[in-house]
Amino acid sequence: MKRIGMGIVGAGFVGPHHVEAVRRLGYVDVVGVAGSTEASAKAKAEALGAKRAYSSYQALLDDPDIQVVHNATPNYLHYPINAAAIAKGKHVVSDKPLAMTAAEAKSLRDQAVKAGIVHAVTFNYRGNPLVQQARHAIARGDIGTPHFLVGYYLQDWLLKDTDYSWRLEPDKGGASSALGDIGSHWCDLAQHISGLRITHVLGDITTVVPKRKRPKGSREAFAAAGKDEAVEIVDIAVEDLASVLLKFDNGAKGSFSVGQVCAGHKNDLVLEICGAKSAIRWRQEHQNELWIGHRDRANEILQKDPSLLDAEVRGYAHLPGGHQEAWADAFCNLMRDIYGFIAAGKKATDPHPPPFATFEDGYRANCIVEAILGSAQRGGVWTNVEY
Ligand SMILES: NC(=O)c1ccc[n+]([C@@H]2O[C@H](COP(=O)([O-])OP(=O)(O)OC[C@H]3O[C@@H](n4cnc5c(N)ncnc54)[C@H](O)[C@@H]3O)[C@@H](O)[C@H]2O)c1
Image (cartoon, rainbow, N blue to C red; front, top):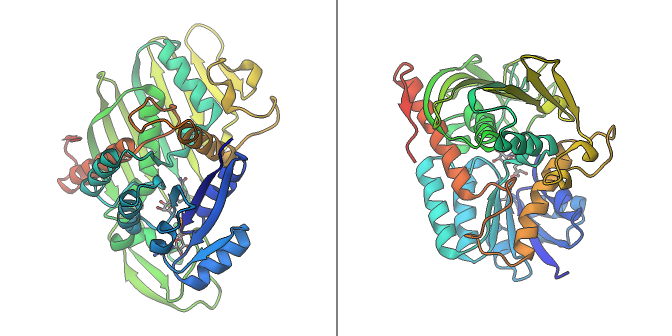
């Protein structure tokens, strides 16, 4: 198989998972790393076993051995790096949210389509085998027409005022924190599994921790404060908690909450879809189980087991039943679909595998978050999601 060269820009928390996932494919070379400085790029390249370290992302983009650029930098760098990679004719795997605003995301989508490159956004929960099973079952009509989609995505890593991240700074993370960071995942997943589109939103947003102790030095994502770390008190303008009512394009209703201040919830994404016949629920923290609810017979728990999955989605499970698969495996499934598409020489306009979200999907997620913020700012009024 022809080998494909990839380069990664940004190797903080999630970047190394991109590297690990593509390595598992067997035909992808991790050519090099660009970091915030040349020194950090060197350290990260060494730690990740990548051949080259670049002084800047521009230098990485100039490397002819790199065909696919992964962008795992903070949100404010998604637009300039993705746009520069597209201009060089590279395929782009961007982390989410695709951009800081819907306008930026739309522009990236248009640039990518015009350039004819393959473009993907890491809405990685799509890569879970039981997510694919739920999607397939709903498309087949197993639960009947969906009428209610409900859930939440809760975390606790910003509960204390000593917790801090660039995600809380609008110039680095965007106008939203919890909604952009994890609400975008929930909305993408709800639409992906159900096959429906969110058309209207009514949002309520809160900043539970309005002042935080910002470290004067740098700190990796999700890291706790050091004991003697120098800090300054800053005002927080973005939400760390939100609740949203939803309307979908088939008339279904729904709601979800997101929060980064909910003790005990580590990465707790829950989505339930209730249909005319049955309901189906997937929970990220118990991702090897799919709950199926019935009215006239006992509810079921479907264990992740390739032999129990539909043939069409069985390939997303790689271990027998009882051998748990998890977040990194789903991330790898996503990369398998993206790189399989690239390796087959497919055009960006060709139908692509379902777990792989494109810049179009990334743009839609940005539009939803913006509509929720707009709704909340107007005091919580129903707002049309404009694409
Ligand atoms: N798909 C997921 O589930 C998932 C999970 C976590 C993060 N993310 C997304 O990934 C992105 C990165 O998040 P993170 O948690 O890894 O953040 P992080 O702060 O841990 O890592 C970001 C990295 O980018 C580097 N960087 C900063 N400026 C740079 C520049 N000019 N050139 C190159 N590198 C630069 C930083 O030094 C750091 O190593 C965010 O957009 C976030 O939303 C997605």
